[in-house]
Image (cartoon, rainbow, N blue to C red; front, side, top):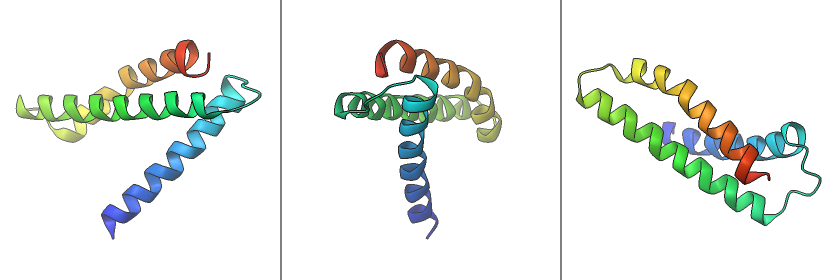
Length: 89
């Protein structure tokens, strides 16, 4: 049940984020498949970066929760800048 709930929540978060950032933040009139594919690619890259850094820093002895917390700011910056200059450009 937890895995299923996590997957469903990630899908909802992804779709809501795509709409919200595209329409409300970056003022895209027509969200099309090009924007969607770029957003999906960015989401996958961010997930891999987050997972990779958490695992790497955990391997070096840091707590996973603390590592996840310190990764928020860099990932938010990467996400915003990539969306502004690539995904919704």
